[in-house]
Image (cartoon, rainbow, N blue to C red; front, side, top):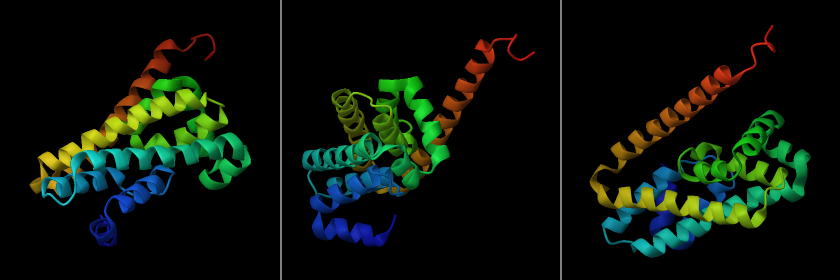
Length: 194
């Protein structure tokens, strides 16, 4: 993790945490789960308090997600494609249409790399904003609780946990893709392939 960001956290505390998490949730590429683990370590050392960290990080994540949703909903496909690329948006939109609410919830904490794309496509598909907000808050709160708690409980092993969780995310994503492809093969129409 970038030493400058750690410096921002130690200097400005919760406002810096809110801003960093909001920007990454809106789509900036940064290992925000690793950041939450590091913040959990700060909590264990007494530099920050647990519940204010959880509330601030959750609020930042939800704020960033709302930016993505608004971009898709009111900016439309051309603006979303400009920022994210047309092919990525189409794939995420297909995922959003297929998985709906569970996809929003799971992309907050289980398959986090999909989160920013799901935000945009949820807006593009005009997914109900109140429903999106509820699922978003629930998923982000779970994500923050998991990672900050892990950082707090294992503050002396932050780097090892971050590596393990980073690899585990890709393994889970690979299993989901494999299961989806397997399901597609099992349920495909044999007459359509002839």
